[in-house]
Length: 86
Image (cartoon, rainbow, N blue to C red; front, side):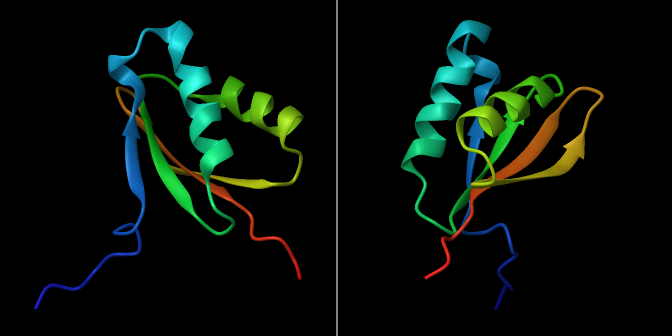
């Protein structure tokens, strides 16, 4: 029986098919919809570092950002919503 990987429950969001002007809006929509503790893998054709700063300004200390792959042609970043302390 195959073993599940740690990323098996994460959805993969490939924004390379979207025009650049639509990418951040789509990603913000996804981050807004995340349940606490949930995450997704963002796939992009460049380092999305400016997005990190936008998210940090909008949602300070409320999300995680972990590079899974760092180019040169494809970048993958796991973005998650931090579970709130009870």
